[in-house]
Length: 81
Image (cartoon, rainbow, N blue to C red; front, side):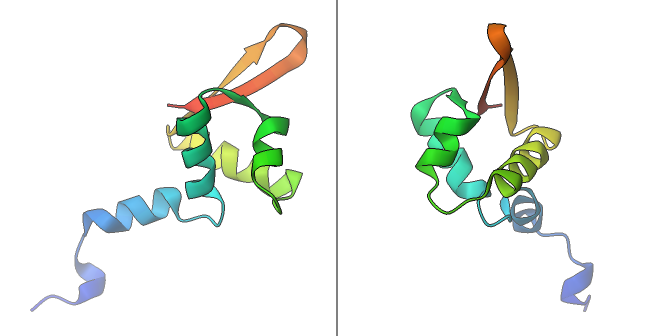
């Protein structure tokens, strides 16, 4: 019988994608609120630092789960991919 570590469970990939402390909450707010600017998203996520929020958003963007939209006048927003 193969070791559990050798098995490839679909849930493993899911956990790797949304396993960060704030990632699930970020995705829920974006799905509920549509496109949100970073500041608005941070206000909705009480307790998250700007640095951690930015890191988590960049990881979600890298993994194709969210996209960033650049608006005129340097306004940036995020939405689910």
